[in-house]
Image 1 (cartoon, rainbow, N blue to C red):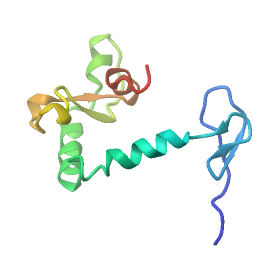
Image 2 (cartoon, one colour):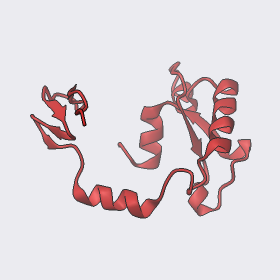
Image 3 (cartoon, helix red, strand yellow):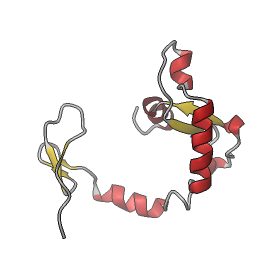
Image 4 (cartoon, rainbow, N blue to C red):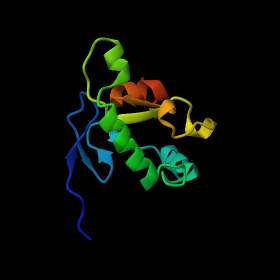
Length: 115
């Protein structure tokens, strides 16, 4: 079976090349514990993010094309992610009142994934 083509590392400042999930500059892209967490977490569909959610997400982004957090700071940034104000795992619904359009950077900061 053919291998996937190598790609440039996406970590800031790294000039390595990623082959089979391992960067020549900064090492393995994922830890074994991350993979175990992904398996326990379940698929996106099992967590409520199936085709119905994808349609709702697209409708919401069309109606709210700019990042709410950036707009509040006087910036104009395209929204790419839809954030649940009350998380689905905490009982939050897919109602528009519980959704917020954010750019990926702001969404990562809000969810604690990147900042």
